[in-house]
Every structure is written in C-alpha cells, then in structure tokens.
Length: 109
Image (cartoon, rainbow, N blue to C red; front, side, top):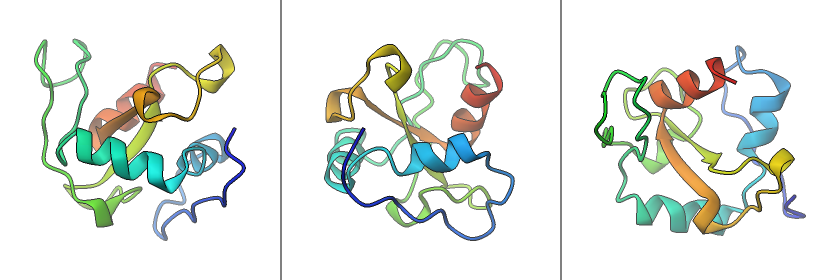
C-alpha cells in the first residue's frame, strides 16, 4: 500500500463503504494523474457485462469529479489486479472508470 497521504472522500458520497473510501486513497496522487492522462480523460472499462457491451466505455470524465457520484463525469481509480491479489499501486495497475462502471464493478465483487 502507498505510504502517501490518504485522499479525502468528497462530500455527498456517504453511500460508499469503508473499503471504497480506502480504495480512493490507495493510489499516490501522481500515479492517478498519470493513469488519468493515459486514459485521455475517458473511462477504460472493457467489461462485457456493462451497458457498453463488448466495447470500451470511453465515457468522458473530468479530473475535478473524482469520487463524485452525482456528476455524469464522475469517476474513480481502481486496481486491475487488487491489492489482496498482490497488485501494486502503479500506473500500469491503475484503471480509470466512470462512476457507472466503477459502481458496477463493486456490485460484482
């Protein structure tokens, strides 16, 4: 896990579990910035069971709306390989998901 400061969970996201709040702080800020730039401010989700089907979601997201479930451009960073499975908080392991795809991944855990 990162030894850096934890990211404050934005107001209005009281429905998040403690696990989800911890996930928001697990990646160092610089890793998230690099992953966000790599994603070109778009959702990277390629899961077949989400509304976008077998295509990449590519929903436009905005940096300022990280963790914001109320905005269409809300998003969150998520591990490709979870920390529990040995995943590290690296750019290569940081998936950028729109809020819709992020919450759907939580429902299938």
